[in-house]
Length: 220
Image 1 (spheres, rainbow, N blue to C red):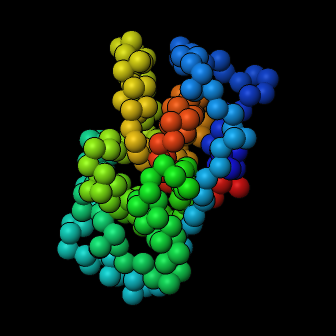
Image 2: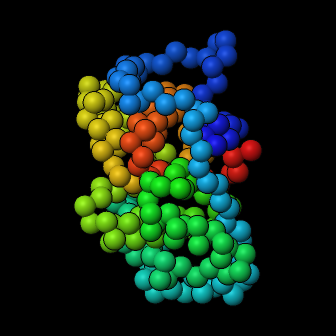
């Protein structure tokens, strides 16, 4: 359930003393009015695999320098095309989670939206969510696929507010058939960014679009 995804710092605290938003209100249209308790989804975890599986992934030639290339993908907001299911080496501990990821990719926006993936640093979350996005782009060529990190999203939001381009910022994400949101844990402590993200989240949910979130912490 969505309420489980946004606990432990992933949702804005609404108690006394919470800072007031400086961002103009999201347009109040009926299709953006979904309640949290109407939303369900799937939560999956990636475990740290045995050393031989980790080494196999580390030695994959297509990865090159993954950290640098992933950063470039995040800045472009386009999935990292070299991260695919074909070069994702899943051991026994993660076979079920990878199977879920493939199910999401086959039928986006259906049973597994939102799809929340968590696991420690280095367990392959970014690879898996990019593999899903790349498969969707290949199978559904008319789909608009967005890929963004929490940090990039926050920077773009602040720039949009400064430049008075908030409507264009919102539309750039609300038009996606699939939105992949990485490093979700970094929303913690950024109340205005959280508020804006969950308006966009709800807009996509109402339209039965696919949402994928990844974080390094479980949604306790």
